[in-house]
Length: 427
Image (cartoon, rainbow, N blue to C red):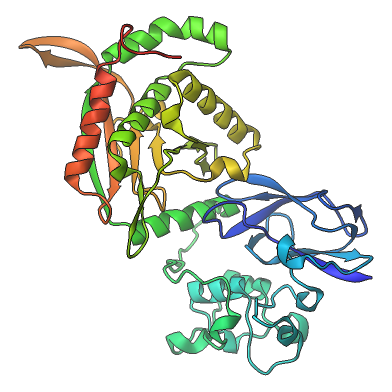
């Protein structure tokens, strides 16, 4: 018999951790390859983790609602024969069965006793976030190894052994630390709790959202601009078609579909906004894949409409409906979240009239579509009541400048204002 270990998979671009929301197996259960083991929740997606082996569940290495870094072991499986495709399956070998053992270049070396301190990526991340001197921590893991639970207990108690110098926790050789720890995480602020205060645990999704937002704000120099658009013709066309469309197609023809189509069309003319910063170069993406923000009660997801410039308004409306339904049902898949090149956020759905969005890293811009409101405006020296909407653009100033963004917004404005029954096809 051989022991194989299942690790937390990476369930999307930029995903660094996942939360075990529900175990679907227990120790002693027999599983076959591809059977679901657990439901995992990230800021990107809710998904089932399938088994890479056939055998008996030996031990669950994490509790429900516990958050683990990508690559950490979630359970062990006893199989009849050792597998030879560990690397392809994304698993670790039996010699790495300690949950907190770091990834090393030599598996045999990891199995042998060593005087040099070795820490898992999760332990390193926690220690750096809280300024903990690991040399002063007594571990409860195998052979005294420091585990993630050891550090969480210290954090909860507030009795943190602080490092005398910033380098106090850097006791491992560079090749023994993977993945690279984000050193820009903000320290936890000590906040006192008074009588009547309510403490709400931070979920894995909320932690991941916080991490992504912090990364975007730390790395991207945000700039912001806005245009006012007369959407009266678009509103009139959509309102005239919505009942017939719903009866024929079975889903709603929303204002948002018109805006996404206009943005996709403008991106074909201003591809600079469909770009990403990559250090020494800027990558201008060929495909126009629009990320749309879909909110639940406690989280925000950004599924992607692929090749939006090639789709009709009807096709975009259908995808918006399908993706939103997947989010609400918890059935969004990892591939639904990948490949986005530009984000459009329907902030107007909850009444917002002006907002400054945080860019969806690593994209270069995000457009906020605000609520459509009737306002008096001056047209040909006369006052008329029109359906007006603000379009607010946040941009990465490393990639984009005001001139190209101004022209892009002007083009989106022009497309929206020229929508009419005679020159706009829904299909």
